Image 1: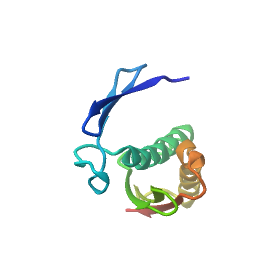
Image 2 (image 1 turned 135 degrees about the vertical axis):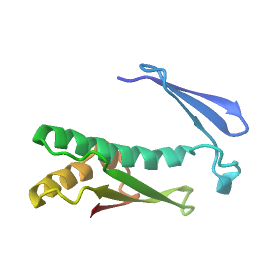
Image 3 (image 1 turned 90 degrees about the vertical axis):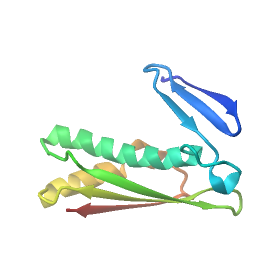
Image 4 (image 1 turned 120 degrees about the vertical axis):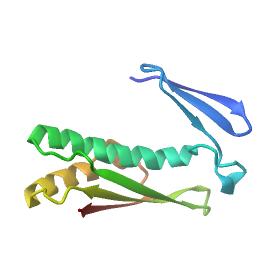
Length: 135
């Protein structure tokens, strides 16, 4: 079990602390929902969590198989919906990978990315579009 704490600082700002490491993240409400957009919004963090989880899970698979994927990067676009309630409607993730990976390495890494814990934890109503680009 990992403990985290969150404190409301006012003006829609919160500060979350990861207790084991002391690492901190500040959040703000987004501009389209009464905030100033000065920090990640809580729903932005869900998108960032998905992108980093995909890369981390792929990195674990790469290490286990002797695959070099340093420099891989992911970009995520979050789309909000308001019906029936305000929530994340879609997360579109583009993962940029080294072109030199073999077809078998690509298959293993893509499978790992699709099975990351964050992706598996998202509600089925959230559309997750995961695209891999080899460059």
